[in-house]
Length: 285
Image (cartoon, rainbow, N blue to C red; front, side):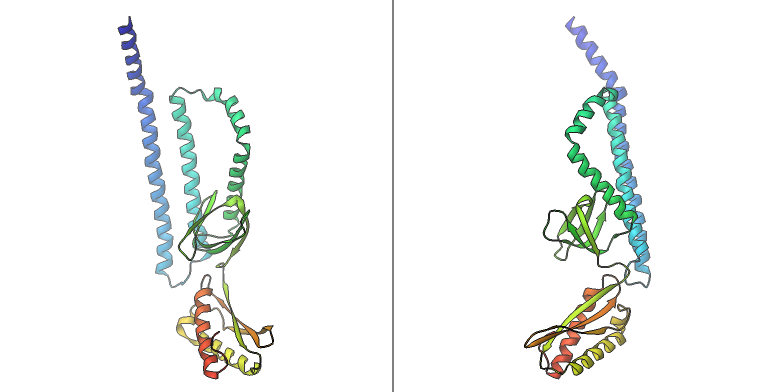
């Protein structure tokens, strides 16, 4: 009797392996292959976007290209999440779980995990509006104020999904920010940027002469072939921004291509420091 029961059990298990077990394997393998295909398509699309930028004469990515790049990342994440969810349901069915009978336990579990689910939904909704409103895209330099953090997250956008935004800062560190915790976004590379330079000079200096020197530096910078490609117009002198007993600060600003304000700012500081040093007005700027 025991031998017949064992034989029957082995036969049933063999039948299950040949039917439901095989289907489970095929579903998992199919999901993996589909994931690789979708990732391949995404990488090909993003490579074409990057190749179009590199082959053009533009020094920075256009806003449309950055948005398309980010949209490709988001769509890939959404498609793969849906596929994994549906495949998970099919696998559960073939393992003998009745999905209809799981409604009540799922409701209890959903109530217990309501806070966590609320956070996830908040992240997804925030990510949806970030993408649709084009607040930033792939390659943008942003500064993000995060809930519960005293320091802003700043860096270059490397990845965007509906749930998280991934940045890489100047030190090479990767920062992951849940979209639902984003309070404020400062995009430092949208459409155009501004390089602002504070020039400290002695309070006894001739302000008119200092302004002449700075205007001359701005004119020469705009005439320089290398810098002119990064500048949208000639740098301007805004005037005295701060005044103390022994020093005054003069602000100089320049509109630049998106994300190029740091490079332009460094170059202008070098030129301003050299010009003031020749006049004996300052050792540094």
